[in-house]
Image 1 (tube, one colour):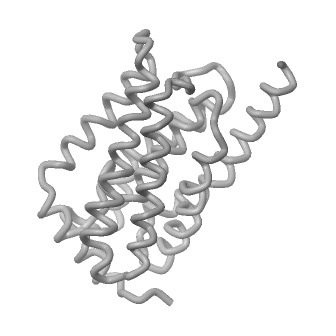
Image 2 (spheres, one colour; image 1 turned 90 degrees about the vertical axis):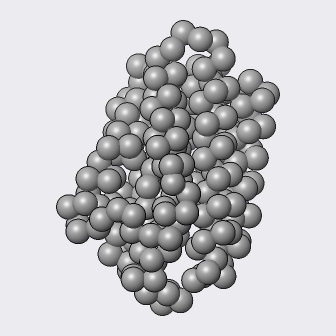
Image 3 (cartoon, one colour; image 1 turned 180 degrees about the horizontal axis):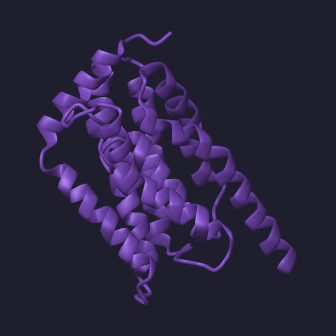
Amino acid sequence: MLPFTHDDFLEVFRAYNAAIWPAQIVAYALGIAAVILLVSPNPARSRAILAILALMWLWTAIVYHWGFFSAINRVAFLFSALFVLQGALLAWFAFSGQLMVGLRGDVARVLAIGLIAYALLLYPVIGWLAGQRYPSVPVFGVAPCPLVIFTFGLLLLTRPVPLILLIIPTLWSVVGGSAAFLLHVPQDWALLASGLPVVAALLAARRNNAAAA
């Protein structure tokens, strides 16, 4: 049983989206920039993509979870701490330059492109078809669920993938995805379905790389 109602949940997003405008446009611009960077020959593309992800996770941690969601759910302070940790990890890997992010020819690319397209394009369409109207909706880049779906897509295109980067997104796929059924947010149902396939694909890639080495 959740400590808040469906209407309470949507009211948080209404207040949040009104308060942060036009950050939503900036978030979409950054998301599109990350997609463009996937096919860029720029050697700094991986660092830039991870830095964009880090910024989104930190923003969602501090502004959404701590600043707004905590008003109806005290557990949001814990969520905020976890999202800060994920953002810090992404920022560290962006700074270290250890990871490569880009389109690849393996099977995981299809799932990755599907998740990225879902987060950016299909997510708001499904919400609209379900009767949700802005500003009382979660928006890409500044809300946790579409951000985690987008993160899964980019991690599928990352080599090597440190397992530590999978823990918090996978936990949120269970927490946020399960809550989506209780709150009747159909665009978030994909979150619950995406965690296991993404982790399985990334673990398989790690095994294949280890075998090849």
